[in-house]
Length: 136
Image: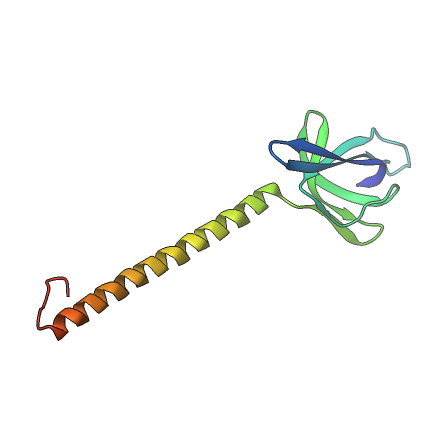
C-alpha cells in the first residue's frame, strides 16, 4: 500500500496488428513512523484498463514479483474508492475459443438435423412407394 508516483502508459506492438498497454509507476511507501521506505516499481501489462489512477493516489496493489518489479492485474484506488483492472488477454482468448466451440456445436447440430431430415424424407418416399429400406 502506498502512493502512485511517476505514472506512465505506453503501447507495445507484437505480432500482426496486436498490441498491449503497459502502465508503470512507483509505489511510494512509508513506515508507521513516517519514514520513507524503498519505492516499489509496479507494472500492469494488458490489452486495456478499466478504472482510473492519478499521480499521488493512495493504492493497494497485489501481484507477482518478477525481476524486481511487482506485476499486477488489479489494484484498489483507496483515494477514489474504485478499482483499476487490466483486461486479460487470456480471458479474451477464452471468450473467442468459447464462441468458436458454440459455432461448431450449432453447425454440427444443423448438419445432424439436416441429415436426419433427408433420411426421414427418403424413408417417407420409400414407404409411399411400398419399399422399406433397412435404414428406415
